[in-house]
Length: 285
Image (cartoon, rainbow, N blue to C red; front, side, top):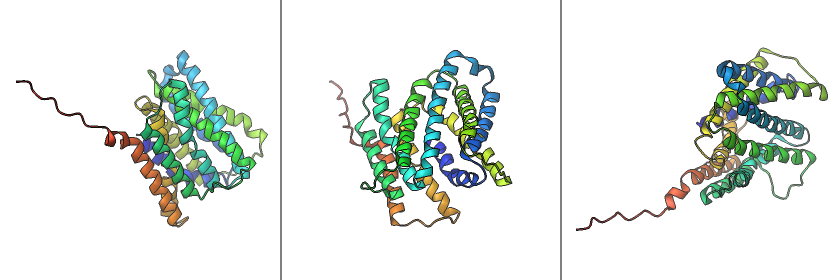
């Protein structure tokens, strides 16, 4: 189910990029998350009024909004490929944040898988270790830390409650804060049919559905495994872009995608493959 979420987010990458040519980022975020919030509120109904749901949803919503805000402003002073790579560093941050939150050290397979996935992201986006960090890179680095915190906190707060209600509060928080931030930027709004299609697609599928599935799935798996699976998003985005004829992948992109896939495989099954097999018990005579 987490892989399905990643598929949705990766496929909507091109949709969002096109939509931002018709309006400013905060207007798009307010409409996208507002629509997603309405859908989740209609689904969850009275369960959103539970005290823990409101408290935890508001906290997660603040972290999610801050991540989007830092990423949006960071893109003004960095390239999309560098932004994609730095955002992907959240894969490394999650094991340590989860360790702090749950006092549970990640398995070697999860850490190794995250490291391999990061190498794949660097190869996929062409990010060099010797590249100087710009102001936009530093803002995006803050975004990556916030995304890592959101993934880890979702595991902590998603237990024992309605996942849809928790997401409804989150999306409402992001929508309201995005709307309040519109005057702080350069408001721009020239909607087209394609723009409204992007709002509907991202609002209902990428926000309401995918984040609800993420919350439900993280009740059943660790934050570290979730983060490694999410590193597949740029691979999906590249495949979608190639399928639409927007770019042609070269050897670096193919190698990067293969490394990310290998990192996910190591994280998911690495420990099981090297775990010693117990000898069968012998029946006593």
